[in-house]
Length: 398
Ligand SMILES: Cc1cc2nc3c(=O)[nH]c(=O)nc-3n(C[C@H](O)[C@H](O)[C@H](O)COP(=O)(O)OP(=O)(O)OC[C@H]3O[C@@H](n4cnc5c(N)ncnc54)[C@H](O)[C@@H]3O)c2cc1C
Image 1 (spheres, rainbow, N blue to C red):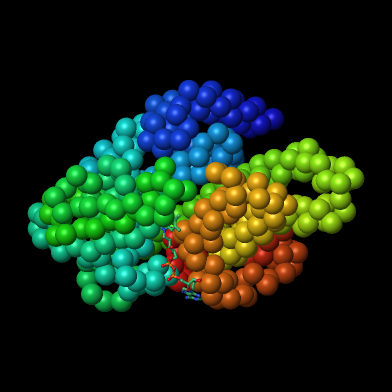
Image 2: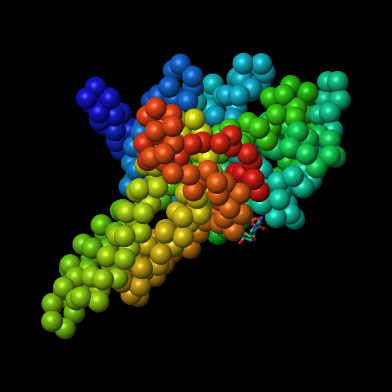
């Protein structure tokens, strides 16, 4: 009960903070959330883990009030940048300082993994490189389709520091956006303008060695450790978005007059709408299953299945709502527009095809009989799910 009332209190805090913010401006929203302590209170004080219920509340409130791009901008920072920076904050002064400023909403940090000119799913091949000296680091390369690229203060950049095609060949570099040699070009058009989506280029960017954060060699392990949270955040956001659009669509269908009455009374319209609702139920169930699994010991490949499933369900729901709304769906910010923007759910953090390859790799774990596993463990297994294998990064993990 106290958890529920704490959550209601958090909900009210978020609501009151957002009521004063300019909801189309990602930096202002981030500043507001940071200054009110909302970003900080997303994480458990003890182990710095993200509180998934609070994350859900925040994403739902943002979806209701802010533009699509603003939600994307916040989502990447709370679910990916902060958890990964935390991994190195204890040992690195610059990471510690940036993390504190980020949480207070004073700076915006982009997360740059997807390499220029290379499939985003082919992580081990990435070419953006850092040359490491005793006191210096020089970054060269480029990252494409990066949220917050345009207008960020820093970018947390995944760089290769040795040529071997091995998971231990990478490190994180915190690159200040105003360093000579750093450029950002907007990409993705209007839907993503408020997310600062763009391409970053690094032309022999010269930095002090302190900008290399985290132990060289550990970057992909840090990434794999937190990618489930990123996928869960995306799934929670998609659930909030689809629920809102389905509510709006139903209200519209009830008002819209056909020949014999409101469109909502037409059996074919209702069936089409019901199919969308079925997809929402699917997202809901799979999100809750993943919350349970994350709270236990790992995802056992469920995060990959969630990502693949959500990407398809969102497209079916928004495509269905666009069709139900006819020409009206083409209005600025309408369902057809939203459907195009929501392709990020099947791309950002891993394309569906690459996710499916990973799902197949986890077939044994995903096929395990949960009831049997519970019996074998004397009942000490998370509800409704099978045993969890060590998570192995497969394909693009972010
Ligand atoms: C709105 C938006 C925001 C983004 N924000 C960020 C960000 O902040 N930071 C960041 O680093 N990146 C970001 N990205 C990039 C995103 O992570 C990549 O788009 C994603 O990893 C997929 O890479 P890709 O687009 O190069 O597609 P590719 O990997 O080239 O895939 C193209 C097609 O090939 C298929 N495919 C690829 N590999 C396999 C495989 N192994 N098995 C089966 N099929 C496969 C895919 O399913 C897809 O259909 C963002 C992208 C978008 C659209």
